[in-house]
Structure formats: structure tokens, C-alpha cells
Image 1 (cartoon, one colour):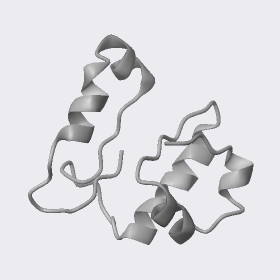
Image 2: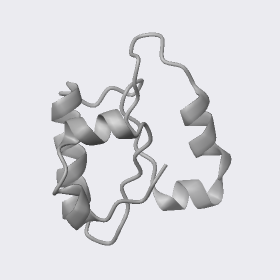
Image 3: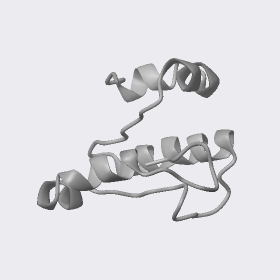
Image 4: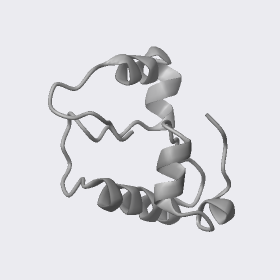
Length: 86
């Protein structure tokens, strides 16, 4: 996993990022930018709705209260999809 700044992120194609990395964590104070980047990913990989088995939303407070929640979500296997978007 690698940290990519938003200005670097927008310079690369989503296809290039998807082939290079398999874990993406979107974070920062600009909620609008995060929302936009996540929506771009969702469109590219074919997530058109909020599917609880495919698209997982975790916020920093949830992870601070229970750090294992992120690892549990990563380890869980979806029976319906090959990929998960957090």
C-alpha cells in the first residue's frame, strides 16, 4: 500500500491505479474531494449502488474505537463479488 496525494491521484488513470494497487484508503479534510474520488472509483469498477457486501464505508472514529474493524473487513470474503471497495 502506498499513500498518493490527491493532486498525484488525479494525474493517473483509475485503470493504472487499479492494476498497480489493491488497497485504497481515501482520507483527508476535503470531504467533497474524497466523495468525488470514491464515486470515480465506483463508476469505473461498476458499483452503481450502495451494496453492503461490496462497498464498505468506515470513518476514522469507527477505526479509532475498534482498530480491528478495518482488518476484519479486509479479511472477509464476499460470496458475490471478487472485489470490495472501502
